[in-house]
Amino acid sequence: MEKIALFPGSFDPITIGHESIIKRALPIFDKIVIAIGYNANKKGYFPLEDRIRWIEKTFKNEPKVIVTHYDELTVDFCKKVNAQYILRGLRTSADFEYERSIAQMNKAMHTEIETLFLLTTPETTAVNSTTVRDIIRHGGDASIFLPTGIKINK
Image 1 (tube, one colour):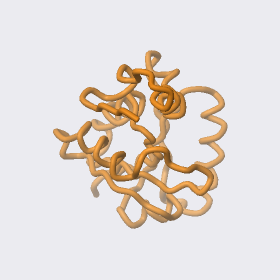
Image 2 (cartoon, one colour):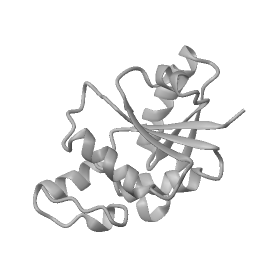
Image 3 (cartoon, helix red, strand yellow):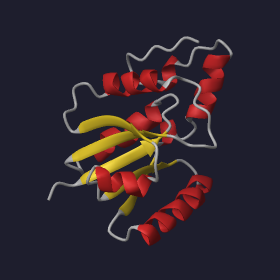
Image 4 (cartoon, one colour):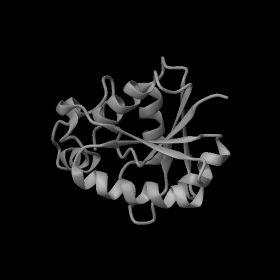
């Protein structure tokens, strides 16, 4: 059986932190589905089409990566794409507490789906989409926090 992981998120925008987690997870899985999820509590800043395009460009040479989007419970979407794993990155202990709670709820709903956490690398611990968006929104240069080749001007 193919080992498929779902890496859900808003990727608004994708950062070098996301990229690092995905690259480090590639040897673990046969396929990684990067899925941009709709979150009723978050209004996307960048259009969905741009976020998909940036992720596809970042992983254009990686056949194990698929990019898509969804608008349902993450565990239900896992079943649709045959993912047995949910991949999540952890930057801080606050991330752990938040993600642990979600993982436990997901496990209660679908016991066959496991959540796998990878710690960020030290150099990407401070990088998050919210801060990168703020830099871009205020005309700053966020290029050092974005994957190579991704240019965002707002």
